[in-house]
Image 1 (cartoon, rainbow, N blue to C red):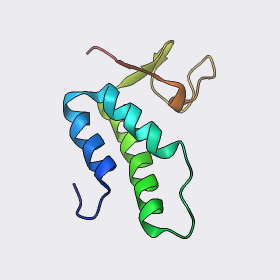
Image 2: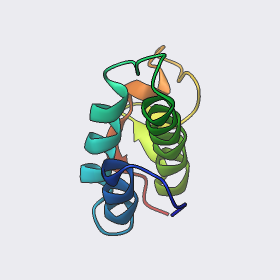
Image 3: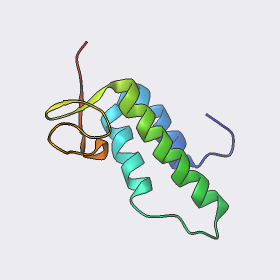
Image 4: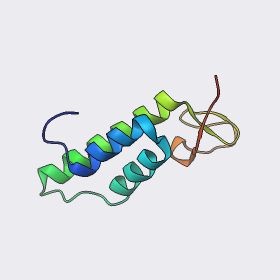
Length: 89
């Protein structure tokens, strides 16, 4: 974890190792509200949460109900519509 990251991002990063679904929910909560353009810290938190959520999906191989995670699956779901169900290896 990089120094200067918000407490919520740090908490989500810790949860990603033990409870990916809770980490996903926390990242989604952070990015659910656009940051204030005048707050550098809020912008950094938003960007870090967005990138970390993508990394979580990549690392956990989250899948859409109809297949592997990708930008769009064959049914048109966006990656952000993916359900928190890791694909088994």
